[in-house]
Image (tube, rainbow over all chains, first blue to last red; front, side):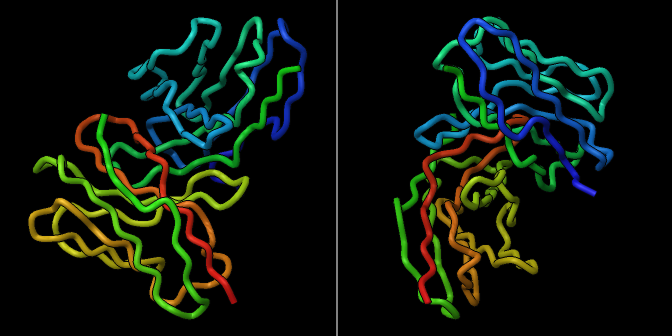
Amino acid sequence: DTAVSQTPKYLVTQMGNDKSIKCEQNLGHDTMYWYKQDSKKFLKIMFSYNNKELIINETVPNRFSPKSPDKAHLNLHINSLELGDSAVYFCASSPLIRTGYTFGSGTRLTVV
Amino acid sequence: DAKTTQPTSMDCAEGRAANLPCNHSTISGNEYVYWYRQIHSQGPQYIIHGLKNNETNEMASLIITEDRKSSTLILPHATLRDTAVYYCFFTGNTDKLIFGTGTRLQVFP
């Protein structure tokens, strides 16, 4: 079983659309994250949730809204997509005792 | 944000040890050194972490200098599958990982 799974793996959409990326972890971890990797390969944290509560919210446009229905899921909804949103988005999770984060395989979002 | 310095790229022959250095001179006493790697088109993969003692696991060894201002990740017998970008960073009580530009390790036959 995949520890951290994201869907979809690829997403191509037009500017102005609204889209969601889903993430699920079966590791029993308490904390989940969204990271964005841009075209220059820089990985930056966007959000962090601990047991369904938002604990980190970096400087991200409010068009991005994370939602955590339970501690095993953290979805990312993006409104009014822009060309600059094109990137690879990674979901990750970690236990309370921070021995290592587990990342998903990424969602490649292309806005045209 | 925490800052580390790593060489942009390194080469290593297959079967040889790959030694990847990292400078983290602003690290403070309660911050851990972490190493991750990212193989092309995959999510980052945790390798190892340490506070001040040297650490070893099934993937690699981590050597931290006594003053903790630098560390070296050692892949004892590099394989072609170890070709990846290796990220070093340190973090303490903050709950986020701050990735730098990393070292692109190319293992050649």
